[in-house]
Length: 172
Image (cartoon, rainbow, N blue to C red):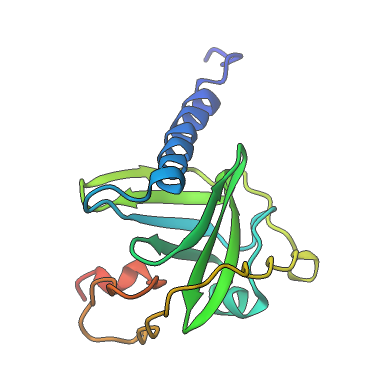
């Protein structure tokens, strides 16, 4: 078998991550158009991810966030994005490198991307950086967090961001 010196797999992955970067940059600059909203799943302990200890304890392997109605200070850089969200009424600031993202989904148009994160370096819990403090910008009143053990899946609320496990939506 021939050796791939060009590394097409890396080029394709980076091109798809640039789609994600562009979409988030547009959302940061102009807000979300129409019914668009994003489910973003990432590796919680990946190098460069910054979460509060509370969120890391709750989501030690991976975390899914929803950017829909209530998020603030979305900042998109070359290698990561940063966003303010509310979890259980507590404002948090998350930093997520694009290399830590496992999947991106915009269910309004049935568009999704899956990323191979097998090469992601995980950081030992003792060495994880602290999450940045939430910004001093006025934060809209958050909605209460939904219980994870709900029998029926509930759509994201109009009033706030919600972290959900995708297993909630699978038929049992």
